[in-house]
Image (cartoon, rainbow, N blue to C red; front, side, top):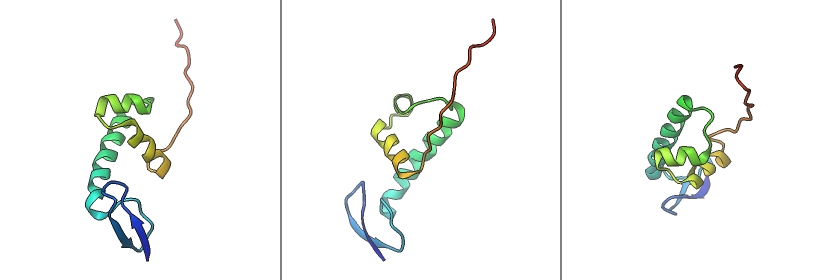
Length: 83
């Protein structure tokens, strides 16, 4: 059993796995993550600031999801379209 501290409400709780949020706050994370993933499917070249402005989620929350492994980074390239 692991002793964890929720990143949202700072409640101390125990669980079988190491996790960053309690059951009560998990739905908040899931809702935000669902919104971000839905937005990225439509606008795949967006960065954290663009997502933040469109969805009203603080950019640090988006970056935290990336640090936690929920969102990945990708590197792309831009090509000039032929005239």
